[in-house]
Length: 74
Ligand code: SF4
Image 1 (tube, rainbow, N blue to C red):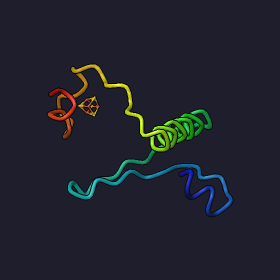
Image 2: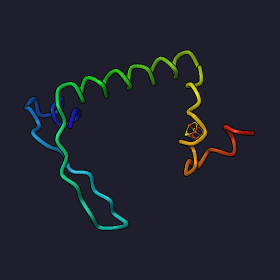
Image 3: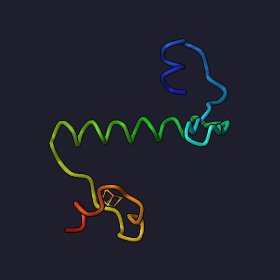
Image 4: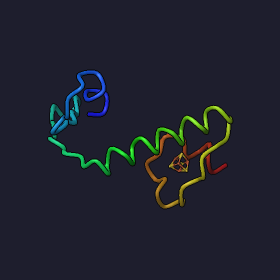
């Protein structure tokens, strides 16, 4: 949604999340607060990238399905 708004210069009223394996889509709306939160997260990621710092590790119970768990927890 943010990219569409930036590229087209118009407000984007909704987005569509598409799951190709399931051939299933969900219509999503986002508030201005949601968009601001995404921008803040992107800025934090960019800062981590520039400083080569690692993010804070999540609590282990949140990691059950993470593909890199074996690297984080060894
Ligand atoms: S295992 Fe995955 S979810 Fe858990 S802290 Fe590491 S990267 Fe984050």
